[in-house]
Length: 115
Image (cartoon, rainbow, N blue to C red; front, side):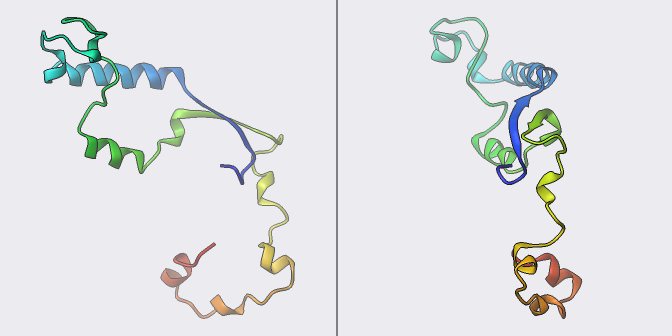
């Protein structure tokens, strides 16, 4: 994002609402919602459970690997979000460096090249 002129990233309000609804529905079937005193319920024995992901720690980590960018509103530092594409050349091409080292790769090899 820092190379694409992104100024702000805000979670859409409806996304927060829906994730919260899903999380609370999940938590109703867990030990966190039983009638024991817990800091997850602000030190009370009943009430809303907070600060818990709607799944296991492994589930949480796997979920973080694939952000849902469509759930965010972004603003940019430029009027056109694609201004970061520049002049259509890579830095190396623009500076006249050789780029023939990748010309004989297969399509699959080409996709694996470092950018």
